[in-house]
Length: 194
Image (cartoon, rainbow, N blue to C red):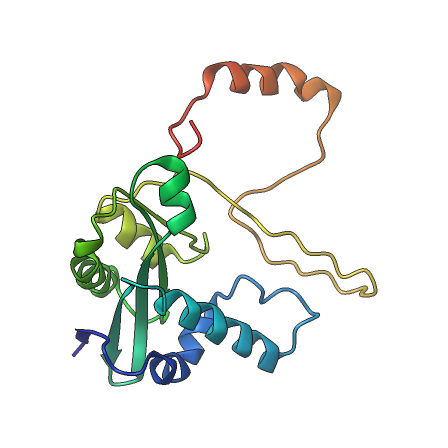
């Protein structure tokens, strides 16, 4: 059985309990320059800093394994001032065994706690390989506006990582020009920059 609650107790303690969840899809996990301890320290610092912002709302999901989900919503002061509307950022970290319904509940609890912020725009950076979280967010009204991928090369290694990404890429060729121009002329999507 899952237990979702707004987190009012010392947040660094929660982050320490949730470390396996935080490190699962850490965006720096492919950077070999960081040791496991350094990755842990960076993840802890970033999330604690986010949760410490005035008005931040935090919620945890616990089950028989311990802290299985953690969600933080915090206001973005610079973005709000620059774009002229209340903007915020959500951080969502969930264990791989959680289903979409549990993730939706965690997000809903955190959004309810963040309601006093009056956010008009809420963004999240989510690993594209976290399909359960991605589907849960889409089901709650989020829409994909931007895609970021991190490419890493290990120059001194002869071993190549053969894992497949979300899509295949290849070098640009001159005969791609017409297709690229067509895409540029016919494709438009709303983002916070347009």
